[in-house]
Image (cartoon, rainbow, N blue to C red; front, side, top):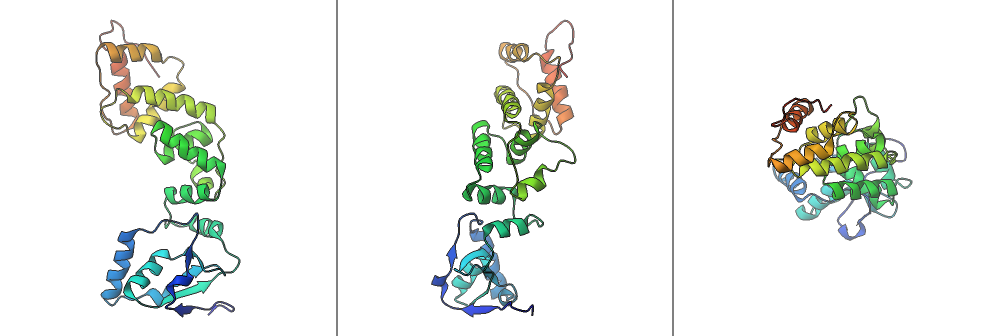
Length: 243
């Protein structure tokens, strides 16, 4: 045992509290833990819940809820100097938290950049990854980008809001003509059009409306660009490039 670290056990479930910023409890995950214990795979005592000195749950809320349901002792360890920021930082090096978990965490901790990101996603109906890249780098997606790691570490900042909104507005305009909900690849194709010196958006909108054209779903950015090129030149005497 590491010196100074002790595992405790209690049936007093009421002493534990949940804190802002941590992940919400997933009932399906609780049920999986309960069923595993019923099948005699009881590992709860070897994987204690981690709490602050005030018994705020930092990690292990699903194990806590499973212990309650099973009416078994809660095994826990106290990390007196830790807080939810500590847990988020630790989880940034694992896959145990999703990107949405980190977004919720840092929003609840009062980070204005994460709050604006969430509102941007809702306003333009864009997914988290695309929105994050747009606001951080002004691109729907970039290769070898540090944005994801920065986001998980709680250091995300909005640096390209004007460009991000320009791309998002273009995305929204074209999404009106898309067959079903657009994919991330569509956002990447729109990104390319935004930076193109030859793309004529008013002309594209006029042709889509006039001929009642629909942008068909494509699996990749490249195929989306080819589809948009085809639609732009629909019934035109001479084909013109758009990117």
